[in-house]
Image (cartoon, rainbow, N blue to C red; front, side, top):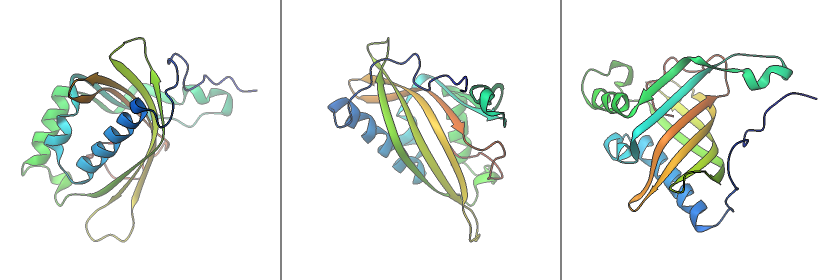
Length: 183
């Protein structure tokens, strides 16, 4: 038997699929993917809380009994705040973003969405899968970035705001030359 922690440990009650709260979260993710896929970064920024923490830890290949320790949080692909993400959006919207000129053609597929209550009355937790496909230039192949996202969403009168995201990429070696896109 392995010594793996449950991915839902520490989360509250599971919210039923099809409930109003669940559908609100699912619609939020679909809207987020549409905005990012169409490079509407300023509109996507409106879905971010000002205390946002957005991280993408490195992954190491470990033995089965060490799987829970395969994500290394002392070294990150991304370790962002609201301010740094806004800086990235400004750079990507300008003429100096060589890594995204021409822009990548990206599609984000979100699935396996689970939504949980949290200890904060105005926040929900979510674990979901995302498959990002990315194509550049005239290449005939796609980069694939499969990942599991652990999110905290703040419930406001105007909708949901992303206040925490940890993206756990499945690959130890990235199958893309850079991470100049948001996951």
